[in-house]
Image (cartoon, rainbow, N blue to C red; front, side, top):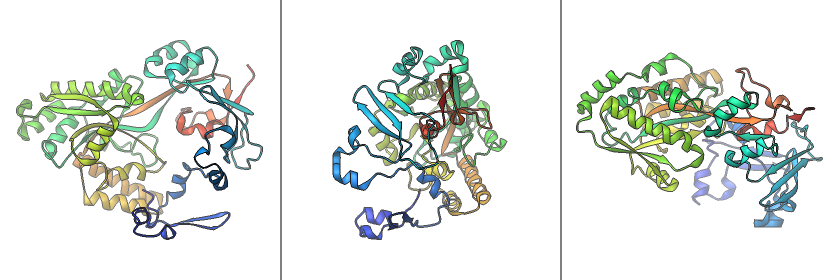
Length: 411
């Protein structure tokens, strides 16, 4: 949370807009004031972009609805927009920033961003890059392995409990479900090549991630321990345990991961604990309202980062957020870490907070999503170079860097 000074009070009308912690000192200087120190502020701001005030005022609701009114300050500008067909971008001659592009022109074709339609276009050489969905993955790996690129996304999938109500107010029940869940088998069979096992809120590759065995040990697959814990909670072999619905949010892009994972968890909990779980796909608003208003108690969730800092994940479990769990100690550690200037001090606080999550088990962190895409071998440039882990990525999150740092080689 950025916590711009007086944001909440201004939004509620309790203070005038000029009391907001955002001031323009002159035409080139913007001053942001936060409620407390926020060392990651600049990193969070890179996901924003300015718009020309005079153009917005001139065109009002028509701003950016056609090529003539889409004015920006990026590396490319819109040359042509044929709605329902394509957008043509050309190099912006007025751009003076750091990311000056190699390419002279980019054509974005409608209907090709979804791999269902985009991948056939890729095979026909109509486009040079396409996302690859789970159903296409085996074909690409078999027939064009040099064009396939996969990498872990900064997205965690997890089971979330309402810890304030039965049966999940008993930590032994939460522990039992945690130890009855075989993440390794889930990711090596049902989600093969689509996910990797995860045991903590922070995911691999993200700043502050800790690959210590401690988290794995506290969440290890141990069905005998799981049965023992459930029996101690008053449900021997699942007897007397209520039938529960595991709610899944109805998002098409996530369904290849969510639905099979939910069905696997259903089978695992029946086999290992004797309890009945019914996966149910819920409309987005119904799902979100139930989560925020605490009207349901068991969810399969996915969370993807908004900016590259541990606070973006760790703030998720602060008291008053979307999860029905609260810890004063956790809140104190995370808020302290959010405001510290020294990186090592911050990381240590976050790791202490993660240990509290492992101890209290308000969630069962299951797996990290793998992302796959194909691009032509003649696309080159530092935007596509492998990182220190040998991974090349060109997903939607990194497109702004990739498209300015690639070129088409002779072929």
